[in-house]
Image (cartoon, rainbow, N blue to C red):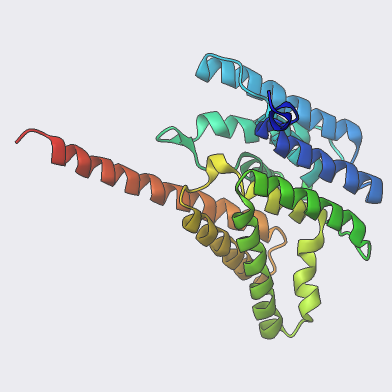
Length: 271
């Protein structure tokens, strides 16, 4: 056994590690959780739902890294004085992985779908995390350093970089159109919500198109649709943008794959 292999880590644990770093950093810096108990409820519900549905639909116990990341994302992003939205959002998020599938693929990012569902269906009880790092750059720098290394290790840094570059460009466009200061338009990306968004939601390999160039194009499209939503003053613009663009891109890829398979079958069929 080499020294490298001895100290290597299963890549499936990298996303949970980064999610935990975001949680601890944000909570220590700002205390941005509604409560530890609500976050624990979201995580435990997510993991339990993953275990039950994985066993039912796949006949085996699933790896819990994805369930943990979805649960911790819900626990940080959902804001409600009640407990039930955390459990319900986590359950919806994980259930979507098993119940909403096209050709064996789930097309929505689980936590994004769950949060959008709660914002639309329970808007009187649920809001989304909107805390900013303020003038404290250290928490953001810590998260970005760890996040960049981890998503690079997972081969997804190009997605994050494409989105961030597009967000900066469209923020300048919005500033020109609205007359707002550019820093005011770009400020949201420095918040903890966006750290989860750019390192987890838009980089999710299970709900992304496959070619790297297409992944970059989708990231730019998400930023573009988000910019349009922001011009119309939609508070939850990033969630809605991913909710619309991500599945649309996946369905297009699935349909193109179907057409390619049909042509291949036709070419090899006996005449």
